[in-house]
Image 1 (tube, rainbow, N blue to C red):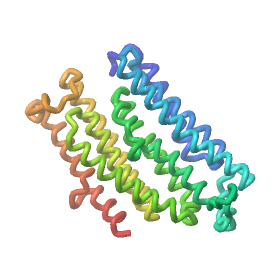
Image 2 (image 1 turned 30 degrees about the horizontal axis):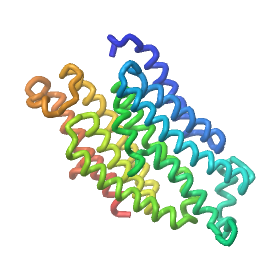
Image 3 (image 1 turned 90 degrees about the vertical axis):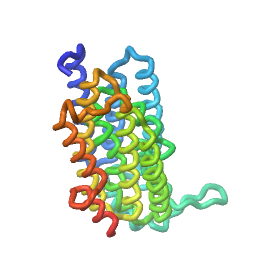
Length: 305
């Protein structure tokens, strides 16, 4: 992208986005997590809106922004419940108090609601929207309007797995909310099947990779519902590495065909760049989880649990 007019702005935004994600992973206070979550939404919006002269890009950026705000609403609701019930935003104190609130109910009129179920459900909904699960997935294919390096960073290895990371981080609370685990299993299963089937009928190569990501993240969500948090984290890392590499290869291929993303006009590319075809095959082999690959081992760990 050295010919880009605003390459410096892209680099600044990528660095700020990466800083926000690292801050999210290492902070241990709910207020800081909420702050990082907002920063991630802001910088992802600015990256998607990088080519702001296109009408389709502006529409994609607005759609991304709207879904991010819905996710932030659920996160803020969880934050309010943390302050009002746990009287703290420190995660260690929240986790210590969780077993003592296992039978705590909130009464609204004649109805009683299990507190930890509502708390974890709001948390999972916030993470699921950011992770582009079924019914909330529509922003991710449109967000492919971002430059390819941004897509490789955001839509494969950081933004869409932030919700999965959040569920793993609050796994202590998920142990006391059985209904939330059932919800994650159902949502992940539907997303897994929907993403895989939809990806089969895509002609746009970047949207194909986007729907593939939706399917794989559904696989991870389903694993979280079954309580396989260590196995989910292992597969998350392997998927992120492979998918980021795949995005770079897709960007190279699109650049090779003068910006064309229609796969129906990309036949015989192995004749012109055989090494890229070999790398494509290797990454696809890994992501498909075929025998003797890293993806196969990670999926076996997940399925055996």
